[in-house]
Image (cartoon, rainbow, N blue to C red):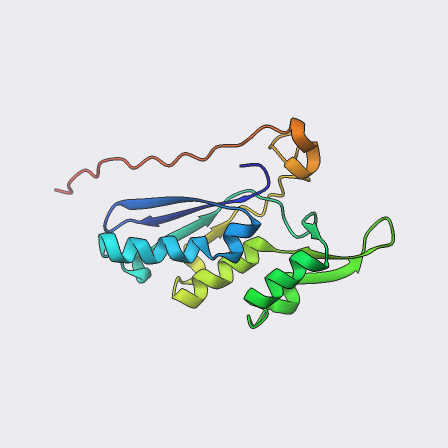
Amino acid sequence: YADCTPIVIYDPQKQVVANIHSGWRGTVQQIGPKALQKMQEVFDSQICDCEVTIGPNIQACCFEVGEEVKQIFEETFGDLPNWKEIVQEKENEAGEKKYWIDTSQINRTLFEKMGILPDKITESQICTKCHSNQLHSFRGDGTSSGRSTMFTILRERKEEK
């Protein structure tokens, strides 16, 4: 990924994990919550057991969009109680009216609405564009941008004596 939102959902009771690549379109399609629902269906994961990690991605400080993308987000998420925090309207450097969207906060809010406790959600809060010298950012580096990868390793549990 390069600016998209990597999400890990972990169920320590069932020892299953979902690695999710959620770009802005995946966020609109609510791919994170859909993965959690799939974990419930396939592995009988209980929401109260699950933990979520939201990795480095383009943060609201740099995710500038036009009216058309903002409309898509508003149609999908405009009823969220924190909508006014998720989308900020202001002028960009060229003096154009634009919108800055916080996809991490959208994902956090969606997981909380499903019942994941806030203290079981971890966000890196690292902006890939602001840190494009350390992380890949398509918005920062354009077509020459590389891609980041997320790995999750589950180790076998040792039985307690």
